[in-house]
Image: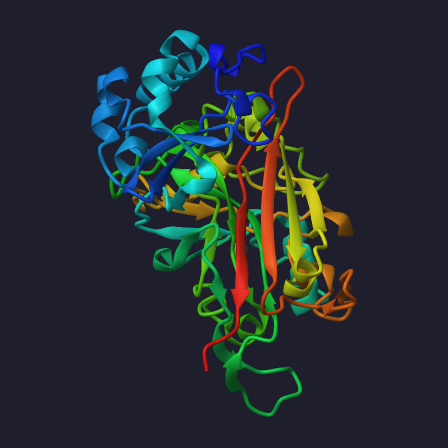
Amino acid sequence: MIDETHDAARTSWVESATGHRDFPIQNLPFGIFSTADRGPRPGVAIGDLILDLAGIASLLPNTARDALGHASLNALFGLASRDRIELRRRLSALLSDIGQRTEIEPWLHPACECTMHLPATIGDYTDFYVGIHHANNIGRQFRPDNPLLPNYKWIPIGYHGRASSVRPSGVPVTRPNGQRKAPDDAAPNFGPSRRLDYELELGVWIGQGNDLGAPIPIGEAGEHVVGLCLLNDWSARDFQAWEYQPLGPFLAKNFHTTVSPWVVTSEALAPFRLPQPARPEGDPAPLPYLLDDRDQQHGALAIELSVTLSSAAMRGAGLPPVVLSRGPASNMYWTVAQIVAHHASNGCNLNPGDLLGTGTISAPDKDGFGSLMEISRGGATPLVLPTGESRAFLGDGDELTLMGTASAAGFVSIGFGACAATILPARS
Ligand code: MN
C-alpha cells in the first residue's frame, strides 16, 4: 500500500537524508544499535544519523512503544502489519515536521559513531536456492549434463542453516578449516579452505509467525515478511564439493553468514514491487499452494544488487574497490511469498525473527554473477586485481561488500546499507 510516507516530495529536516543513497525519509529501516555510553537498543536510520526510538517513545504509538523496549526487534517483528504501518507513519511525520525538531534532535546519533548489532534474536535460519541462473551455473560445474535437478522447477529448494553464526556487517570472517578433497586426491585432508567464496543474497526477516501444524497460505505469506536485508552466505567450495551428498550443505556454509544490519521494511519496499517474470515456455506452472495471482503480479522486487572487493594490498595502495558484479534481484525463480508459503506448507512453524536467505542471485550474464565460483568458472579463470594479484577465490585480508538499491519511476530510491566483511586467516 502506497501512502504519504512514500511521497517523493516529502523531505526531512535531517539534512543528510535528502538525496541519501540508502536512507532518505522514504526508507526508515529498523535496526539495533549501541553507542559508546549505552547498550543495544532499537533505532531508525535517517540519512547519516540513527534515531534512538526508546528516547522518543512518548511520541510513538502505544503498541510500538511496548515492542521497542528491548535489545532486539523480535517483539516489533511480531506486531500486526497495521501497527507497524502506524509506527512508520508517525516516524515519517516526526522527521518531516520541522516543529518536532527540538524534541527529537537530542536522540539522533551519527551512524559512524554507533555499533550495529543483529536486528533480532534469530531462532532459525533457512537458505533457499531460488536464483535460477546461479543454480544453472553451479549445477553445470558439479553435473555438466544435468545442471538443474528435476525438482528445481517444482519446489523452492532449501536447507536448514545455522542461526548461531549469523553476524552483522563489519564482523570479520575467519577462514574455516575443514575436510578438502580435490577430485584427483586419493584421500581427503584437513586444513584451511582454499576455495572460500561469497554468495550474494537477499535476507528475508519473518514477522508474525504461524502455529505448528498451521500452514501459511500463499495469499497471506507476504504479511508474514517484516522486511529484507542483504545476506552473504560465505561458502567453502572445497568442503562443499566433498560433503554435499547425500544430505546437502553442512560445514561448507555454517561457519559464518553476514547480514546488513538494517531491516528495510515491506512497507518501505511497497513502491518497488514488480510482476514475477513469466516462466520460460515449457516450464511447469507452480502447484496451487504456491500460486497466487496477486503474488505473480507484485511478487518480484526492483532492487539492483552489487558486489565489490578490495584486497589488503589495494587498500594499502589507496585503490578503490573493484566491482565484481551488478544485477537485478528479479532473477529469482520463486518469489519471497512462495518460499515463505513453501516453508510453512507442511505445518513447520516460523517465528518472528526467523531469517530466510533467497539463495545466490545471479544475472544470466557474467557481469551479474553472484559468486566467485561462477565468475572464475570454478577457479579456472581467476580475476586479476588492479595490484596484479590474482583471485580465483577470496584471499586473506580481502574485504567484500554487498550493496542494494530499490528504484522505481516517480519514487525516491532507497537502499540497504552495506553488507561487508573482511577475511581473517584461518586459525592454526
Ligand atoms: Mn546460499
